Image (tube, rainbow, N blue to C red; front, side, top):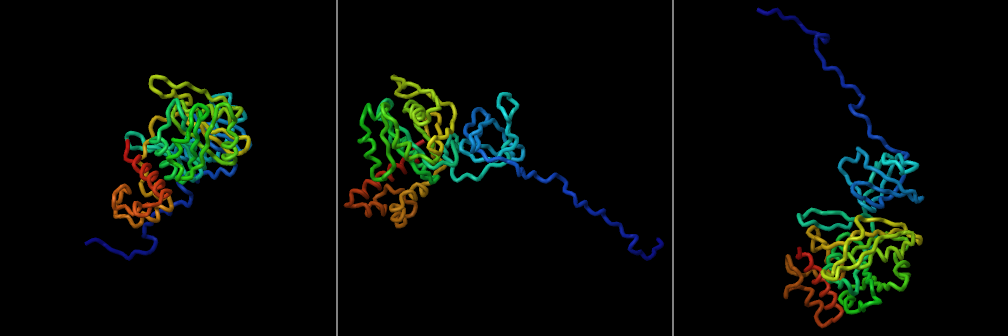
Length: 325
C-alpha cells in the first residue's frame, strides 16, 4: 500500500501569478495631433489642409485598421512635413472624427459608395440646355440629400441660353433654394448663400460645374469640357472630388460628373420624413402604402388644394425614382 502523509501548504503547487504588465503596448494618445480636413483622395493619395491653410500629403495610420477616409472628413494628423516635394513626405492620419452625414450612392452591385462627408448643402447642378436637364437625376439627388439631412440647392447653369422656369416649376412646391446662373455674370447670390458653409456640387458632365467653380474660387483652374453633340453628354473633366476653401469662408467641393445615382441604400420612410406635412398625414395611410395608391391618405388630404396637390406630386415623383435602377 502506498504511503501517505499529511500535506501542508508548502506542498500545494500554484501557478505563477501573471505579470501586471500588459502584453501589448498601450495605444498612443497622439496628444500633439493637429486638426485637418481631407480635401482630396486621388488613387489612394490623401491630401489634407489645416485650419491655417497648410496642405500636405497623408496616409492612414496602422491604428485605424481598414477605415478609409473621404473628402470632407475631419481628421487628426501627426508628422506634418515641412515640404511635400519628396514622395516619402507623408503625415499620418491617426483619428477620423465622427461624420455628421455622408453623401452616398449605390453601385450596380448594391454596395454603397461614400462620395463626400460633413456637408451642409448639396448643390444639384443642371444646365438649362446642352445637355438638357433631367428630372430623374434631380429627383434621385434630392433623395440622397434628404436621406442624410443635407439641404439641397438647385443650381441651373446656362440660363443665358434658355429659360429654366418650366423645369423648376416642378419643384416650386418644395420651396428649395434655387439659383439661375449665367456665364456672363458673377454668381454673387449663390456665393452669398453658401458662405461659411460646406457645399458639394454634383451633376452630369458638361453642365458647367467646373466653370462655376472657377468663378467662385479665383485661384482654382478646373478643366472644363464641351458636350458631345451626338450623345448630348459631357466628358469627365474632374477625375476626383476636390474641396476648395472659399475666400468668404466655408468650402466648396467639386465632384466628377456622374452618369448614374443608385439609391438602393435609401428607405422610403426617410424620404417622406423630409416632407414634414406629408409625413404627418402618411401616418394614417394603409400599412406598406406606396403613396401612389387610391387609398393613400395623402390623396384625401391634398384634394381640392392645389399647393398640397403639387407637393404630393413631387413626393410621389421622388419616391418613384427609388424603384429605378
